[in-house]
Amino acid sequence: MMLCDAREKEGICVSVIETLLLTTFIAGVVGTGLGGLIGAVLQKDSNRTVSLLLSFAGGVMISVVCFDLITEAIETNVGIFTVIGAVALGVIIIYLLNYLIDRKTNPEVPHIDEKHPKTADDLDELIHSDHLQAHYQRRDNKLTLFIAGIVMAGAIALHNVPEGMTIGASYASNGGVMGDAALVLAILIGLHNIPEGMAVSVPLISGGIKRPKAVLISALSGIPTVIGALLGFLLGEIGAIGLALSLGFASGAMLYVVFGEILPQAILMYHSKLPAFSAIAGMLVGLCIIYI
Image (tube, rainbow, N blue to C red; front, side, top):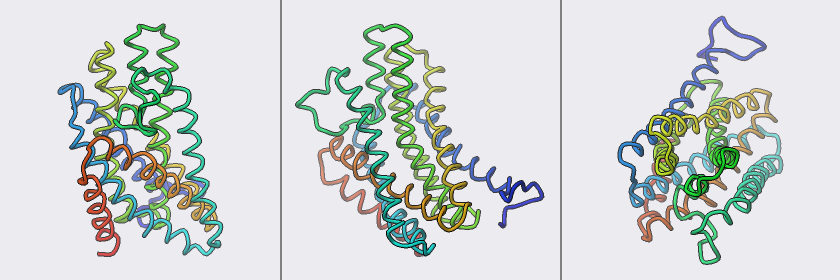
C-alpha cells in the first residue's frame, strides 16, 4: 500500500487506517458539527436548498454505487449471485431497522398521522429529531428523553454507517489509497451532513437545550460515519469475498437510503421538478468523476 509506513500490525497499515478515519471524521463529525453550528446561529433552514442539496448528493451516490462500487464487487469474481445477495442484504437490513424505528416513534409525534406521507417529508423526521423534540416539549422525565435520544442516534446511524461503509469499501478496493470515488463520497457525505446537523441542533435548541451542547450533540451524531468506514475497510481487507461483501452490502444499504429515504424526502420538501433535475445532474457529475 502506498500510504504504509513501518507501523504495520497483522497486515493492516496503521497510516492507511489513520488517513481513512481522519477523512471520514471530517466528513461525518465536522460536517454534522458545522451544520449544528449553523442551525444554532440561524435556528432555521431552507427546505428548497436542503432538498436540492440532498437530491444532487443522492444522484452522485447512485452513479458511484452503480457504476463504480458494484462494478468492482463483480470484478472480484466471487460470482454475480454473491454480489446480488450482498446488495439485497444491505437493502433489507437497513429497511427493516428503519421500519422498526418508524413503527415505534411515529405514533408519538402529533403531526404524523394517517394523512401524513408514508415517508419523511422533512429532515427532522428522517433522523427522528422531531420525536426527541416532542418529548422535550411535553417535559418528560430524563429516562424518556434519554431513550428518545438513543432512538435519534440509532436513526442517524442507520444512514451514516452505510455512507461510511461506501467510503471504507471503496478505499479498500483501491489498495488503501484515497481514490477519486472514495474522496468524492467523503466530500458529498460531508455536505449532506451539514443540513443533517442543522436538523439535529434546531429542535434540540427549541426544546430547551443550550446551544453549545446542541452543537456538540450534532457533531457526535456524525461518529457512525467513522465506524461505518472502518467496518467497510476491514471487511474489504479480508480478501476477494470480504471485499465483494463489503462493497455489495454498502451499495445496497446506500441504494435504499437514496431511493427509499433521501429522494422521496427531497421531492416532498420541495414540490417541484427541480429535485429530479438536481438528482440527474448529480448522476452525470458522478459519471464524470468515475470516468474522467
